[in-house]
Image (cartoon, rainbow, N blue to C red; front, side, top):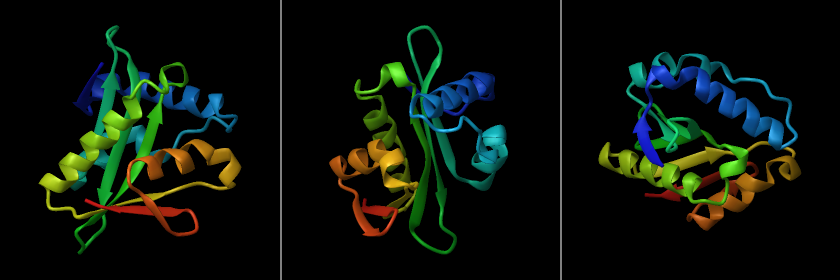
Length: 145
């Protein structure tokens, strides 16, 4: 498995993976608008987005971030891992890639907005604290980088 910067050649495979990931969690599989054009939503604004690609050249995960204007902070977005590939370190590797890039670009605080109800987002509420994130208000966590 490798982590690569977003490549539009993988767009449809990424969309399919995200919809599958949401469905596996029992959520209504809909697509967030930013994923329809990652290049416009992330890359052209100076932000970043990565894909995890497996040995069969298929997308098995993704993550991105948006810098918060006029700050040294950014929000993480769209950390998804294909359901049958969870607990293999892919999410951790994606998160580490994003955090390393944020540090390199001068970002000092990483934030994440978690969904509700909490029971439906139980994986996120368990994942981020394992990586040093702390809740600072309901549904929001952050980490000093």
